[in-house]
Image (cartoon, rainbow, N blue to C red; front, top):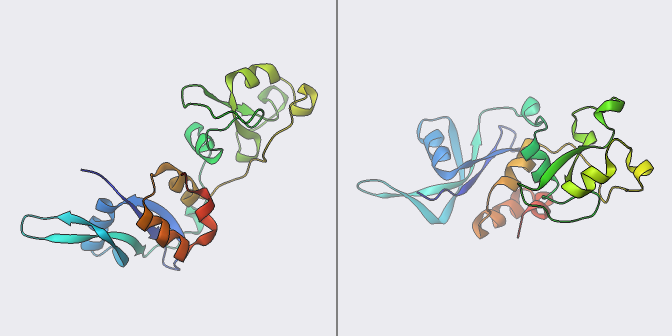
Length: 178
């Protein structure tokens, strides 16, 4: 079965996360979510009928504490679009490394504002130095993404989802991978 992204909004209509259309369907039909918009071209096939797949749903949760996501290797790579923060090279998952801007040996923390994606050669070249000491300025500034931003970068976005995203949250459209 192919899964399609479904935008999940909290009770105040703020972006919460992204689920598969099938998981969203289960939430809707178990009474835990409300459909805001269905896909026009995607359906869930039952034995005796086809049901429109949910594109946007609302759940009865206030997302205040869910907005923050803990840093992880995968989430940092997604935030940085698998791009080395020092040379700008696009790196494969297997070649990407996490670099502490302030090295751990100098008290650097495992936090969003201290972690960036680096290619192996840049990470080794920088070593135990600060970027300025190594003559390697950052090409972009790290930031703490919301859970929704991380989830948005995990999914392959189709045109219907992109239109819904532009209608509901145009500021997130720039995060979509082409």
